[in-house]
Figure 1 (cartoon, rainbow, N blue to C red):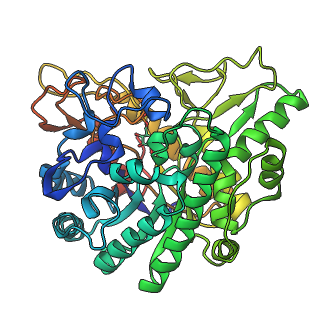
Figure 2 (cartoon, rainbow, N blue to C red):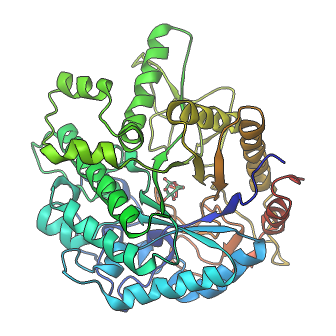
Length: 475
Ligand code: BG6
């Protein structure tokens, strides 16, 4: 058998993209609630455009999303029917601390997740909880500038303490920040950062990164004190960079691009700033304020495992002329002539997953967890209601084979696999509904119209069989 007993097969979602109920149960306004669909989405997500108030001209997909807030029982029942062993979800910070700076948590918010976890446990599904997945209470953005400000560490750790204490007997697996390196690419979406004119953007981003890294270490410390059985991990937007040619300049450039992402995990897993990052900051005149306690805290509280998302590999050239960006991609990448791409230009590369798994395992030698993977595609509902998503099955099959090779041939220690958007949800980058990843279809369109009814796609039964056979039967 290639996958170990107890391998955590499942699926992944995030509160900001599926819950909805944005003002229910005492929940406060969050960054995601002011990120509209349409042409303003990207400038807002980048932290370039200030739109803190919701208006009637824009559509805000998070407000209702797929309304999992009211449908979670049905949704978890469907996950259980597929045989999920694990369900990755995120807690919406502003449900627990609506403004972010309160002394005590919101009981109604805590109760909501109690019920949700109880539902998982009823079916033997292990929850894997992302503590912060692209959301910050808006009050903290407006009053202290979110992660630009060191005070965030206190607010975040108070939030962590509240949920660790409350769910210590229900949740064992935790991730501190979703795709922590996304802070560099989509600063408002990733970390609630809005740039003011004249600010040194690189310095702001790395200062915010430092605050998140310290907060993550602090959370890891508190979590382990509350329950030594907790497994607390970090989370990287993964996908290695290839060099466009064998020109050493291209190879060097691709290494630098990888390091930009590894930087975060190097700190979270090895417990210190890597020399290349210190030198890069020196060179670029980036001065990070650190406190004396930080160094020891980072060193003493490294993560138990490393999780990552993987959708595509990336291709890099040192030549600015060649370096035209692939359309629709948050990460800069060239078009790889050896790969096909999704309808959104994400380049499909199963062997790239094996390469990424090996690169991470070589570097950190800690258990790995693939907590996102999948194909965002347009699905067609046939007249009889069926959805024949063979393209999705094909994508997942090839990626699972690559995982298998990594485990069987390379000896990678892999804990589990939770494909992204196991139920259709709002796309983070575009705000669309038609970019679907799910095994479960949700009747809703890009403009928010639809019955929200759930139905099974062809991939539903396929994945059920994969789980049942522990990945042996991929037909
Ligand atoms: C990751 C995020 O970036 O990729 C998810 O953690 C996101 O939140 C996923 O939804 C897929 O990206 P997109 O833009 O297709 O939704």
